[in-house]
Length: 292
Length: 330
Image (cartoon, rainbow over all chains, first blue to last red; front, top):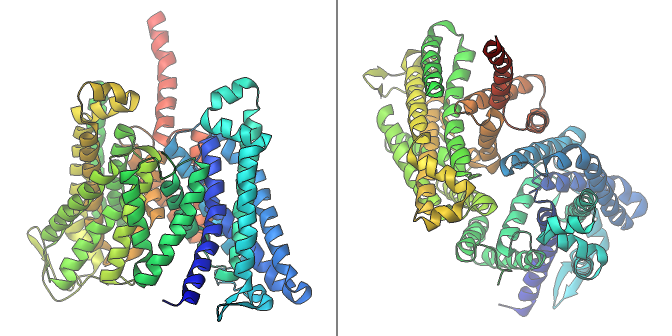
């Protein structure tokens, strides 16, 4: 294989890994702290994706490339705003409920959020490729590659570093990790549980919003994008380890790499092999790869 | 003891009422009730796994689909026109599938179990997609010239409604009652009692020498097989199968039957009725029925904190208790 092709696939892998990381990091963090597996995370991705698409479509002629930045920012804002409303209404009463009840509640919410995009923007797909076209391509070893993806990879890597730093070194990160490993003690020491829960939910919502905002110029906003992204993020979490921050990093890179290799070798089997591998990993290492 | 009698009586009364439906109900409602009986089998079998073993499966749509596709493929490609044989084959195929998936998934519990079931269900989804294509299969059963046999009755060039009215409805009803009775016996068996105990203290049961993995697998296989039976029963009625039936949101819908219905044995029947009836009503008024269904599910689970049957039981006991204490005093 030519080196250029290898570089291209490596970039593709990183791009996908960044998006998966944003989604699964938030999902995993909020599960680790609140013990609520928030299926409606997928709905946030859809809504923020549609918001971003709508902004790109209507403001690109005015703002040019900066419309993409604005779209991502407003997408984040939309996701946080929705979670801000939903947290006291729906999430807070369900933190202490049984797993199956949480599943049905957040699934109901997923249906609501997904259908909201249909109500507001209709069922036909909204393409929003303008930023990718406007920014143009870069030449990497004689192959041209969209600069937008490169920018996302760079920005995403910086965000990943920032996430790692936030969780590991800041006071807030330490509190969050304390809640993740022992909520009773953390609460007994005097940290306000509900406040931390709310902050974590909003934080992970902002990551979902960002993911929805940056992926839209590449993929096109279609009904049900949240569903598929969510299932992949669940796989990432399982491969990496439930509630483990390190696991989200390992899982998203690994899932993305497997996906690239599988798409290259057997184009039609992408999903089935991913699920198969996830099942095998679960059987061998039930607590995920990040567990020693 | 009294509790048992109430359940058996309820089952018997329901059987008599349900048996009179084909004569009195208009087509739309008869079809609805038939589908409802099929979904109730699913609700009951999902409930078995949920309440006794405490396992939340998001892969049950896979067994439904395996049952349905077995019936469809045998009918379309092999030309089998005996409904009994088709449903038997569907039952066997879904038993095999649920034993296979169960023996892998039941090594774990909680979320890991849930995600294993959904992953393996997706594997089956993709396989069915390859083999039979995205558009699914349409069955020549009942409507074609070939003679379709159901027990001792035979049909050819009949509409599916007449097929339903003149025999298949009773067939479905029989299967529903048999499954319900079977699941009721399973629920009272040592298998379920041990599994129930394992929810409270798993370590202790393991140290006593109980093979919980085996019990969970058995319970999972029973639940999956009956869900497959529902799929097999569903297919001659609907006349077509497609790969969307296996999507994980359908599996969560099955869970919703059990959760909305509540923890008592016949709760999921109520749950299946409420979820499907509300879906029907919502689709009449709006294209955005998912929005309403989602809102409805959120409200019902959040506000009731348990299912509808639990609420009914609570109302019943809170009314019964004061009068009982009064009679004691006087």
